[in-house]
Length: 426
Image (tube, rainbow, N blue to C red):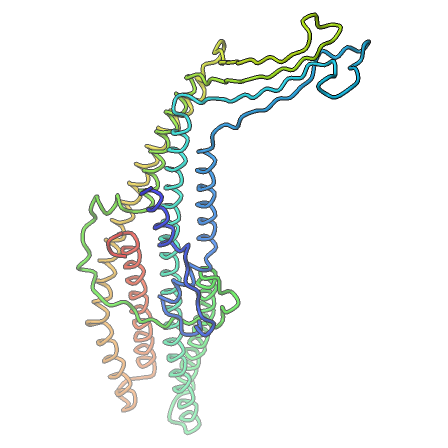
C-alpha cells in the first residue's frame, strides 16, 4: 500500500498531474519557471517516460492474475451403425462429459511475480523522475544558452553601431581632409567585421531558440522565444561537498536499486519453477441406456489431479538466466552510483571554477576594460592616439563583455547541474 502511494506521489511530482497554462501566457518574455511548466506539459521525452510507467502498472496487474479455470465439454461413444437415437438430448445414445480443471500454483509464484512487477514499476517511476531531472537540466542549459546568445547579440550590435558611427564620422573627416584614407579603410574593415559578427550572433540566437523550443514543445513560437530571467547570483562557495546519502537519493540510483530488488524476486521466481504446480479437476458424465451399454443409463462423477514430471528438464536455463540478470542488476547499480558520483564531483568543480571566473570579470576585468576604452575614446578625440589604438580598445572591450556573459552562462549551467544532481537542493 505504502509503495503504491509512493509511486503515485513520484509520478505526480514528475509531472503526471500538470497544471494547464492560460492562453495569455506569452513566450516572448519567457521565465525559467514558465519554461519548466511547459516542459512538464509538452516535453516528448517525459511523455514517453509516462507511457513506460503506465506499461509497468499494467504489467503489475498482469503479474497478480491467477490462472483461469478450464471448462471442457464433449460427447463420446457415438456408434456410426446404430446412430444416436431419437428423443430429447438426454435420451441420445451418446456419452456426455463436462469437466472443470484448475491449476493450483505453488512455490509462492504469484507473490514473487507481483514483487518483481512492483519493483519494476517503482523503477519506472524513478525513471520518470530521472527523465524529468535530465530534461530540466537540458532545459536550463538551453534557456541560459538563449540568454547568452541574446546578450552576446546585443553586445555585438552595440559594437557594430559604434563602429558605424565612427566610420560615418571618419568619412566626414576624410572629406574635410582631417584624416588619412588608410585610416578610414581600417575603420571600414572593422565596421564590416562587426556587422558580420552581429549577423552571426543573430543566427546563434535562432539556433538557441530552436533548441529551447523543442524541449518545451513550442516549435510554432520559435522566433518569439525570449529568455527574460536575469543571470543567477551567487559565488558557488556555499556548495557543499558530495555526500553518500545525496547519491543514494538520486532517482537514477533509486531506479537501479529497485531493479536489483526486482532481480532478487525474479531469481526466487525462477527457482520456484522446480516446485510442481498441481492441476485438479472434476468431471461429470452422463450416459443413457443403449444397446452397447449393458449397465443401463445413468450419471457418474470423477475427480482428477495431475502433476508435471521433471524427467528431462529442471528449468536450469531459467535459473541461470535469473542469476545472470541479478548480477547484471548489481553491476548496473554500482555503475549508476559511480556515474552519479562523477557527475556531482564534476558539477561541484565546474561550479566553483565558473564562480571564480564570474567574480574576476565582475570585480575587475569589466571595470578595467571600460576605463581603458573610455580613456582611449578621450585620447582619440584629443588627438593623443591614432585610430588603430582606438579600434583595438573597442575590440578588447567588446571581447571582454562577451567573455563575461559567457562566464555567467557557464556559471548558470554549472549551478543547474549541481542543483538538479543534489536532491536536497531542488
